[in-house]
Amino acid sequence: MKARVLVISQDLELLEITAKVVENEGHEVVTCSKPKQVISHIRRQVYDIVFVDVHMHEAPYEKIIEVIRKVARETQVVLITSYAFPDVSKHDSIDVSSYLVQPLTDDKIRNVVARTLRQAKLSRESRRLLSTVTAAKKQWEATVDAIDDPIFLTDFDYNVLRANLTTYRRLGKGVDEVLGHKCYEIFHCSDHVLGDCPGKRAMTSGEMASDIISFKGLKQRLSCDVYPQVFAGGGLVHHLHAPTVSFDTQAEMMTTYERVFDEAAVPILLIDVEGYKVVDANRQALEFFAREPERIFNIDLENLFVPAESESAIGSIMGQLESKGGGFRTQIVDGRGKEKDVYIIANSVEVRNKPLAQVLVLPIDLLG
Image (cartoon, rainbow, N blue to C red; front, side, top):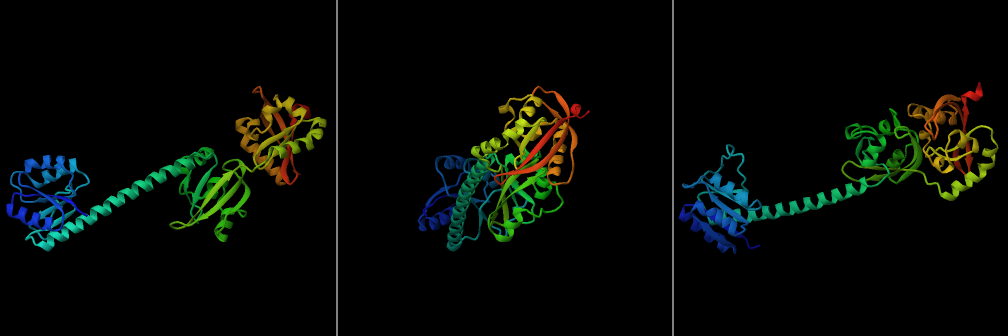
């Protein structure tokens, strides 16, 4: 490539020798013997290489380089010195690309010019690639952060490496509380990998694995899709999302249980145990919770309990479904904000292969 080269020195012989060799290589050369004219040269023209002689009488070479760097950050600066091993340690701020050591020879000059231009090309390409990668990374992160489902990346030792904003928001944790920690500690409140972990299956098979599992850290049962990825060290991309329940399926379930619910003398809720949401409620429940059907259908189960009781209540309900506990006493809050003491009994049912929970809500005052 044809380059523009500026040579700065008060040694006229050095100027002539350097300029002649550089011109013979097909480059455009300008010489400058007066330090005060450097700034005008730099502002008037963009140079690929500027040679600066260390032995300048009218101005220190450090100041000349400083001026060049303020105006032309991309220009490559070559320092012409008499020392075979230049000692610039005392000038840490000096930004030079290479050195041209005297006595000068044609080969030395040609080699320095070729090497410096090659370095400049590599530097430009590196900056371009870095800019492209940085922009792509920001765009990807913005896209992933815009997704409402938790998405996170772990290594093969289950350490969380990255996560989108939804993950932090749903967990109610900060970056330092998530990154670097075991995913089973954060999401399952466990000290070991779960037996039904889809991440374990994905890691073993090398293929995507999916399952519906309970996430205690999120207080939900969610579908977990895990994709093995090949990058430095390898890892697993986890996508958590609510299991799909179509409107038609919900309607069928409601119709099936409607008559049973309406005939019951106590409040009964029908709960989707995969999403911890209410899918139906009988008349007694609507009256007891003081809510219209549209105000209770699809509501998160935790919103029916007083805040201080919601987590333990849901845990106790799940325990009953797994035959690990019996009925329990707690407090609910109705649509008017009134707190009521109740006794909860839950049992598992299945409708069209869909696991559900029937929750009997027994008012304490009725039990005497």
